[in-house]
Image (cartoon, rainbow, N blue to C red; front, side, top):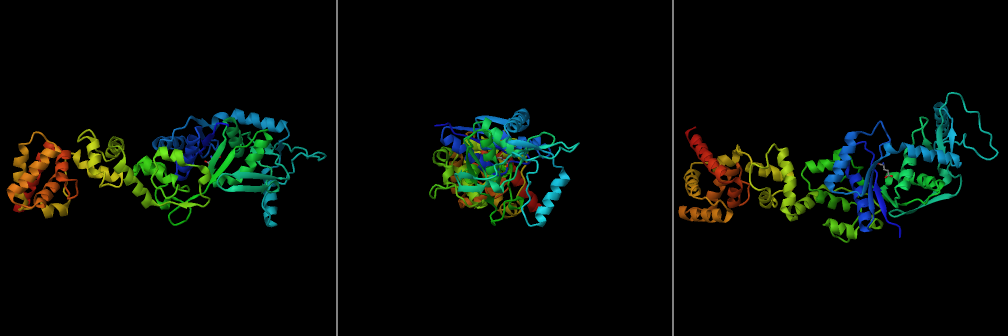
Length: 475
Ligand code: GLU
């Protein structure tokens, strides 16, 4: 059997959006499942709309999602010679012809057709046919090259998602494959590349379904067998409308910035249009083993931000803390926090992973373990840093000053003993201590919080809290 080869072929005219990422994921999974190759191709022939920033954004997105490609990135702008060669071959074999129809004439034709209520289409006036006399090429017109689409018969697409789709050739006009400046058009470059790159399965958005019969005809004209096609249904916003910016993040890297783990986003994307029973959580290994493009749903799927958040939390809680720590480090940096100025990041992850839904939340909660300065939440300070807390905090300082072995079990015993010795309830000590250490009443267990803040900072913060109480008393 032929080795399976799939590709992701984005046009670099914006960021990598989640629809593109899902196409990439499905192409990747299909190749991996069958031990095939996954190829990245940058379709940058639209020189006006393609930008290097966008190429970078796509590469960055692929890297963040860890969608490894076996070949590429190939750039279409580096392959113009090859496209010209194929255009020449199609001209030579009679599958393409020069068309000298000036722009104005074409516009007039279109208008007349639309006025008659017809679909605008080229009328074949420069198409050579046996016995047909072509007009004299007008002076000063640079011709385009048109593909000689078959006039009758039909194109049958056995689409892996949509099933059999049949288009009558009658419905297709002779498409331009080279502009008057000689540059190739989209449908030609895609076919030449899919052919040269040995692509066996084209998995792409169903906005391309219209192009497929034309592409299949070009393949046949080149004497080649077209690949198998799979057209994926659209992704919709939660309200069922076409996905757009107003639905929140659509760029993959924005999810990165908002504190999602790539595993969570991938797991979320794989379920957009595909399912395996009612399973929601898939490791990458499971995705590769279970995914089949033939099982993709035909109907559009709506995004569900709550589910993504739920998956993110799941992966924060269950991933190796050192893995999560790498991303947390980046998010701390985003907050202007130096991740080296505090506890081990793995410990922070373990302490906070039940309490944060995103890495942004985790970084915000963690920032106080890395910074020297600390501000108080006003309400928390008013409630807990008061006269009643002062003697308790003084006793805590006295006890903690004796501790050299600053570890959770040691601190835990010390706090318990102190609560008993002072004859108070645990929260009477824990709450003021929490506010003193973190500025707020929300933090992990008090022993863990002490350990994360560290000995030196804890003692400084306790002194500061005592001074704060004294100052508010005299105010
Ligand atoms: N470059 C096209 C796009 O970004 C994809 C072409 C294809 O997958 O065949 O929409």
